[in-house]
Every structure is written in structure tokens, then in C-alpha cells.
Figure (cartoon, rainbow, N blue to C red):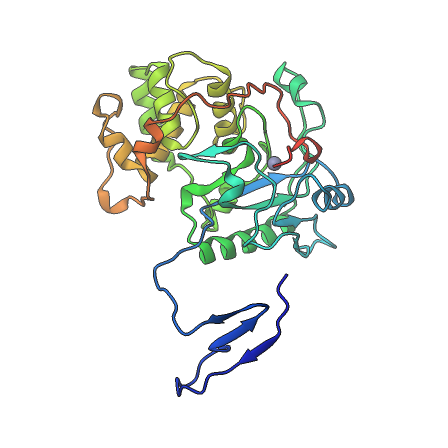
Length: 332
Ligand SMILES: [Zn+2]
């Protein structure tokens, strides 16, 4: 910690200027008279979580020694949006993502802001849900989501976060995480300008195409990788591919999140790629059915396809257990 010893103003006639021109610190002085114009935010993505715990436990865990997040949103108070806890400054690295990857970036703690939403998740263990047990998922109250939307809009605007870089924890760590789960209202967030959503007409078109001419699994895996998942096109429905499909379905088709490579999931994925990453379809005409829209209707976001195609095997640690709780987030 620096001890501010003295602040010296230089009488150089520079006119109205915020702050001291030269600042004296312990053992050195800092000259503020020149500032660069070529710089940007280090924050590239926004990661949404649920805590899998109540407010008191969530606060205790997220202010403890192992994990943290920039923000925590508790349940509403008397039906009104709750106050938002800020636990870590956005300029600091919070420990919320763990081993993670999205669109060619890894270790998203380095480049993201994390928001934890207090929510208790499913009423059964996820391993039992995957085995076929019917589960009930805790809802996200309207007033809680209202607060989240205002916070997310502010973060996205200040850091210039791309639409496709608003992600769930499950999407960036699909073999380990399921949060914020299938009850999270992603479509409502999209309506508020947060995150992508597929156009229903596009989905219907691609679905018809794929029903007539099914795609091989390798094409689906390449499309998942182009969308952002750390999936390797192996042609085999491996653990990573199933996890990616499960995370994708929880977000965009939450009625069935078994992680199967079904036609509707493919249609949703292609509709998203067509709208947000059209360049990825144009380079692979053999697997891009002719569901075309006028270019003027497209909203695109920047994409770095060479980093996607260079992906190696994902999640080398081979973690197979799906974790949803704060207590099982890893220390990083
Ligand atoms: Zn999480």
C-alpha cells in the first residue's frame, strides 16, 4: 500500500485539469500530464451463476477464503428489487469461474465479471435428475431478475461486452457445472438487450432442413465449437459434447436438457450462428442449409474462428461430476 506523502501541483498553466499533475508517493513521483488514448477494458465476458444456497450461506461462502464473485443478488424484499451486494471491485479478479473456456479464451476469471444470483437450484441431486428423476427447480423471482437486468446492462455498457459473451457458468465449464440451470429466464434477459436468442422463424427453417437431411455429429460438434464451447469434433458423443449440449439446452430449450444431439437443438444452434456468427456458416456451405435472411437484418458480433479451430482436447482433468454449489467451486 502506498502512503501518500504529498501532492504537488505544477504551475505550468495547463488550464483546468482534474487531479494533480504530479503526485509524490513513497520514494517516487508520478507525472500525470500525458495519458494514452489506445486502451480498453480487460473485461470481455459476463458470467451468470446461481449460488445453490440461501442468502446467508451465499454471503458467508462468497466472502470466505475460497471463492468470490463481483456481485451477489439476493431474493427480493417485499416484492421489490433487492439491493445488490458488490463483493469484489470490477478491476479485481474474482474467483467464480474456475477452469473454464469460451470462444477461445480460457480461465475466464481473468477476463470476466461474475454475478451470483441467490437461488437454491433443483430439489434433487443433479446426478439423480440425469438418471431420470423428475426435478423441480427453484424459480427466480421477477424483482430479483429486474435487479439483475439493470446491473447487467450497466456492466455490459461500461465494458463493451459482446452479446455472445454473456454466458452461463454451465456453458464455460460444461462438464463440471449446471448453473444457473434451466429455470433461469434467459429470454427475458435477451428482451432487455442482454445475451443472444434465436429467431423462431430461423429455427423452424433449419429444423425442416435437418429433418430432411440429418447432419453428422461431427458437424454439430464443429458448430458447438464455433459458437464458443470447448468441444473437439470427434464424431463421438463424448462427455464434453454432452455437457455442452446440456448447457446449451438449459439455456435455449430448457424443457429437455438431457444433452442429446436432437434436431431441434441443432436448429437452434444454427439459427444462433446465422444471426450472431454468420461468417462461420459461410465458410462451410456443405453443412449450412439455405435458410437465408437479408444481410441487413443480421446483427453480428466479433468472432475469432482461427482460435476456435485450434482447440485441443477440453477439460483434461476429466472431472465428471456435475457441480452446482458454491462450496464445490474450486480455488483459483
Ligand atoms: Zn457457478
